[in-house]
Image (cartoon, rainbow, N blue to C red; front, side, top):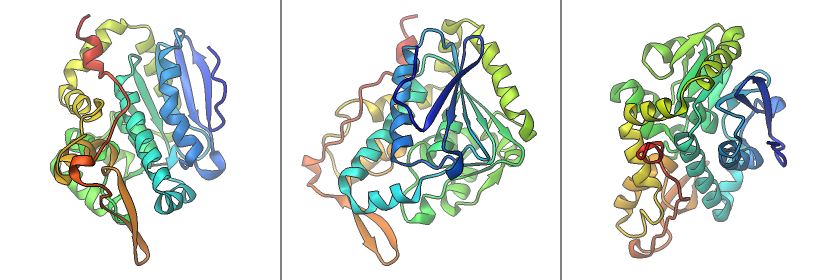
Length: 295
């Protein structure tokens, strides 16, 4: 299968059955601009249709995995409500894409890993991280709630106390500490990250996909259940702002809201419509547990 039409992602086949996806904006440390964000959201459909890919490795080209959100995209979201909504929908699709993938996903992380890049790294089935990598979530420091994957996944991986500390303070952590607290699978020297990730992916590609699918579904029932609830179409059509936020913000940030600038910081204010009119429709997606239930 050819991956046509991608400009910020590159696709390679370094091992039998292994697809290597490279975030490919090295001059910008693979910061997520509008194009890369859109491509990260839509690539999962193409990967699912690629019969020759039995396992996926996600890595960054150059000196970083992903330096976070591109400042131009952040500024555009502040000033354009439609861009904000589109970006939130794409963030939902990125999270659902990783969790719904029927192919095991391995993240190979070096350098900086922030924003959507960090979501990919931590949502992956297995994360191989450089000892000197820098991981962090800076949402709260920007004046917005930690969204995407963070508030759902961090407590499950490293516990409530550590999750609150890092998400509320924005304090980064290196690969050694991330492995110590259970946030990532393994840390290795930087020059061993990609070879180790490819070795792992090659082993997974040679394994039974049914066995792996069923195993992951039963290891992660909490993630699968929360994702199924939050991502199902029409899950948040009605309710108070608090109930809307509870059902969706864990995965995608805030409900559909209008941006408001206060001083030098942008922050998010309540729904632009009454609670009964609030409509948040997520892309149709089945969680991995649902797709495996009939196996």
